[in-house]
Length: 305
Image 1 (cartoon, rainbow, N blue to C red):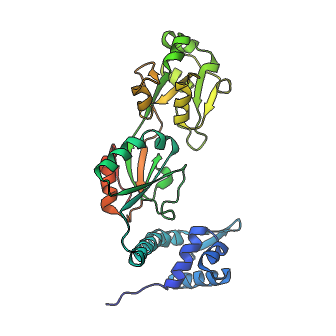
Image 2: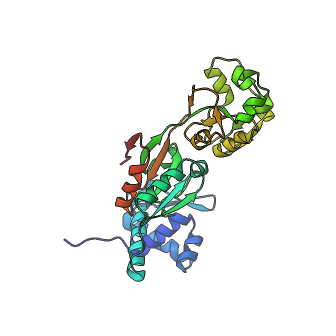
Image 3: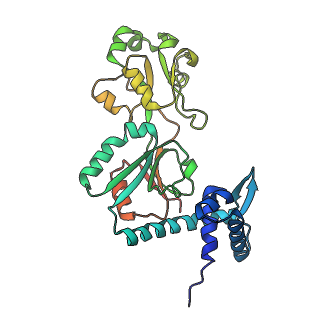
């Protein structure tokens, strides 16, 4: 039985329009007119007897049918492009593209990459440092390390770890402010450092959460102290003696190990969510990706198939 293909030229126009969100941008990419892109999309809609796009604020948005087609089409075209490049330019060196949150890149990721490179020196790693959300398919990303997986529900996900926070500061700060060891609630508001991730990721415990966990009536005024939006910056501020931070235990390991920071208690408070490794179901380099996943500190493996 012969294989039946959809109109390939129409698929190419559809993929570009879906990825860019615009017939004009797709036309520029394909070196044709917007009308030509629109016509090719209509051809594909007629072929499937489904509407693939709807307009929203001068942009085009995928319908449910369009999303279903695009989720299968984009990885296939990306794989075809890579194979085409290999045929034209010769085999390229094995490489994985990792996308990671800034704080994890500065702390947790470095020893893992070092270990992976020592075990597999012939495999290149390209690390992208960026905030969520990230278009994994369009950017050719093999693995995304993120906080929570709600933004990547259509991808395979592996739970890595759930970090916890606890008060920490520099030895010098502790020496200058004996309240941190005697009664932390007596520390002036100005000496508390606050990690504020913003509304999208509002599950970082606050000092009010910490004192409530300890059954202490204390709520430091956030505006009175230093505020940071990145966990690793908060750790650096604390190490510089600017105050006491609710530092993430896992991320702070290098600071705690070399004495730049000291933990004020062994009692911890967990973050609202876990960190995850997510990747497309259709993987460019399945063996290499499994090799990398094997060294990550997995808690539980999940696959949203």
